[in-house]
Image 1: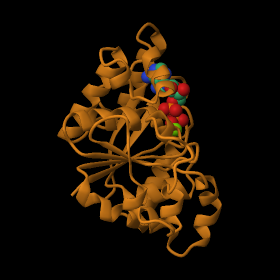
Image 2 (image 1 turned 30 degrees about the vertical axis):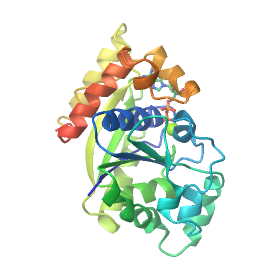
Image 3 (image 1 turned 60 degrees about the horizontal axis):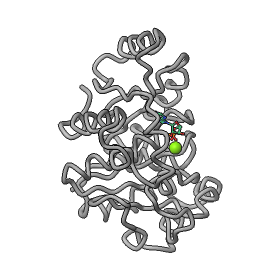
Image 4 (image 1 turned 90 degrees about the vertical axis):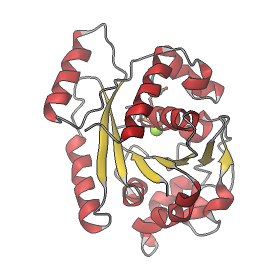
Length: 254
Ligand SMILES: Nc1ncnc2c1ncn2[C@@H]1O[C@H](COP(=O)(O)OP(=O)(O)O)[C@@H](O)[C@H]1O
Ligand SMILES: [Mg+2]
């Protein structure tokens, strides 16, 4: 049975999609069948894996009951990795979903039959704590929280932790935090080191040892429709995501 990870943080631009795409690719490369579910209407994970934004059916069609989850799966440009694309219309889901009965459980129900076919399922969440993120947290076994290594890194995390607690209480008591991941780390600055120290002090045992460096190759890979691990496997960014995958495969930051 596949293990499901939500990649969540309501702040935009902290490296959620980059982590979902590259971690999935590394896990697939390690020989595990992997699925990435794009739950962000911006469809950056879909496009970043070489799948057209307009691909249908997508997650919207699955959540609205118009397509079976298995019908919506497509191959990524990476062996062993499949994508459940966001698809057009997902933006509307934020408005429509709350009107549907049991909306918070729809993503979980959609993913349930897919667990048998994959060892790992990663959900890329949108930058909000809205219904799609809540649905992803309800569907997940564990959460990975990318934290950008910058001033105010911890700002907003309280809101995410509150939402996690609520989802645990009301929908998904098994949900745990797999780890927090420091992203876009710049080793040349004092700031990077200071922020890393602060985050580790604040969340002892919860922060992955691997830190993702700021790396040009990571930023440009999506424009080639490839994870950085295939765009430039020897780049510092690719190497860091391989290290992260090892940590995730052995079971978390703690
Ligand atoms: N380690 C990194 N090095 C360089 N650029 C990065 C890195 N991680 C993310 N980026 C870039 O930063 C931007 C935001 O990252 P993204 O993963 O899309 O964040 P989110 O999904 O949280 O909004 C993107 O343009 C991405 O390519
Ligand atoms: Mg994103």
